[in-house]
Length: 422
Image 1 (cartoon, helix red, strand yellow):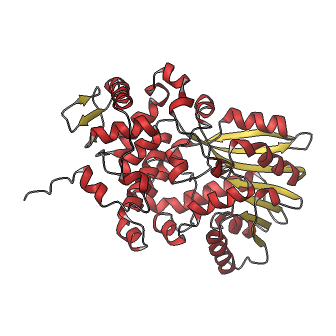
Image 2 (cartoon, one colour):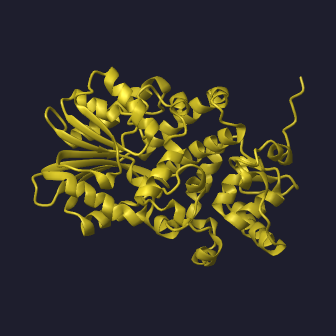
Image 3 (tube, helix red, strand yellow):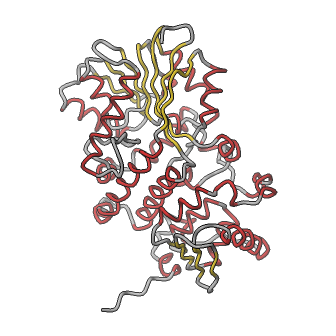
């Protein structure tokens, strides 16, 4: 039986909705000089990497390893030369390149991220890399818009690839490889370790910054805590309220549509799971100062945070990334050093424990990605087109690759107030 020939990148672009994806459907304009320089820089970089870059014009680069197929070299180079990593992601969305094992290919790139661009060009990053737009600043108004663009997409969408706990953060497994039937228990293990760090139990007044879909609030309330949980997502708040009621814990949980800067009261414990990534460097001092201000003397704050290397964070903090444009507007991952510096300089909080577990996030993302792929038709049935599905697949694979390469990590922190009893 003959297999169908792969569709050309041009044919795939014709299927892209120009109203929804204007920067995907048409490659950007670029001078011949700029495109030629981009081709030369990429050829030099790819030629030294442990992968196989196969171009439609017959060019072969790399020392061997995962395969990347570049179907439209001209568009590929124009996009990267004009938009950097934003263009790299848009080129994938447009079908101009592909990879049989996307995670493996992206892992190689993530592992060599600091060395892909020659140092002289890195020093000139401000001249060629897109700048983060002011509209994505996480002011109180901007933060609401940024959060809504991701978390208000559709509760049904997230339910298709998350487990029954609806936990959208790194799980904590007992061993590898992880499997789907173990994911819910691994999410509970992650939540319980944070609650244990914060010493949440009967009578604890707990503030949660970032509700998600309510699983942490439910487990804390089941321990006897009185929980106040803040979110900016209408979709998440409404579903979390329903889940709390169904668990019979509505008298112990208050779910509020409120910015962390609007938090009131004093609490014995504060917990926040992968929320700081949405705050933005400009507002990290305010975020951590809020934790400090809300925490009672002798209280404990337990945070889970994705981190990146400090030098890469400094180099890219003002750059507009593909993730910011299409997935998490306004987002920025801190470094371990940045968290230490901000809390030292702006709060009375001191780090008394830090536990990294990045390999667990790679497995969590793999399970989500596989589930999303298996249920792609159902995602389409919710109204999310093929370009969205390709974008979301790239996002999950891109994130997984970052953790597999060790470029990204995830930490659980315990903070106590200086002078209080740990």
